[in-house]
Amino acid sequence: MFTNKFESHNWNEIKQSIYAKTSTDVQKALHQTERSLEDFKALISPAAAPYLEQMAQLSRDLTQKRFGKTVQMYAPMYLSNECQNICTYCGFSLDNPMRRTTLNPTQILNEVLAIKALGYDHILLVTGEANKTVGVEYFKMALEIIRPHFSNISIEVQPLNQQDYEELIPYGLHTVLVYQETYHKEDYKKHHPKGKKSNFKYRLETADRLGKAGVKKIGLGVLIGLEDWRTDSFFTALHLDYLERTYWQTRYSISFPRLRPAEGILEPKVVMNDRELVQLICAYRIFNEEIELSISTRESEKFRDNIFKLGITSISAGSKTNPGGYSVEPTSLEQFETSDERSPTAVAAAIRQAGYEVVWKDWDLTYDKI
Image (cartoon, rainbow, N blue to C red):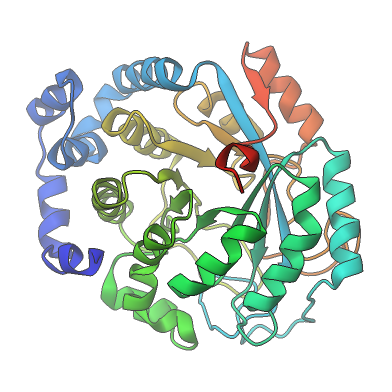
């Protein structure tokens, strides 16, 4: 389990070592053919800031070498905003007075048809964490409705047991995103005071359960703004490195959600500017040429129109972050505010204008004989 490796690292010591990196360490990392976690520390350190242009060029070259000039597009589909957790940063938090909505089969199909009309063939299903109302049986029902319409289905829901994931795979489940939010164990407790999500260890070991269950792709990430982003990013890279060595047949992705406004949430503890986000994205690409890097509509049009040239391989567009937002209930409360509100057609046009090819699906499950 990753827990053992995680417990052998001290947050404060890791943070100090990152901030102690020098320009010599950065140059060494940039000229390596294979990079270590120590090299990753250098690339995300303050000392790397003057090397951003060089990092960006290298990141772009490595991305095109591995992925070509392609950008995969996906759409999030929110099935429910019911949640049993209290989280300080989320609009779906249990202590936020709001009308809760869980889509029924007819509403799910209406959403599916609306998203298909936008051109998508890759969908990400999202819910709050409410095991009793939005549990494994609900997911099976939803997947049965959705599977005939999409070649690739990902989910971002509450962490489940290994057996639960194994049961969902035959229904078309391909990818699971599970964000630790922050690897700072003490602050994690402050941000998750109530609900199953307050169990730091259970969440930390979710990726192990996914790997053992045979899920094809696992998505990792932290919520940027809860803690020092450099230290949190190192622990994400440590987690990724462990998973790739342990479950080598699985693919992996990293997302970069920055804390955005939502109903009743806290202000970011740490604010990451755009240059720092570019630095982080490039650092991941230089550290790992194979990793898929994803950016959402939390970011601005200008930022998104440039960042896919430097390392991002997956992007959402026209996203609705509320249940039924595409067709059923457009005015229900969102999980967070989006920044880039352009339609998928407009985003795809911007990608093509830059000389890149738009890919509307990630992978076809028929290739996996499912």
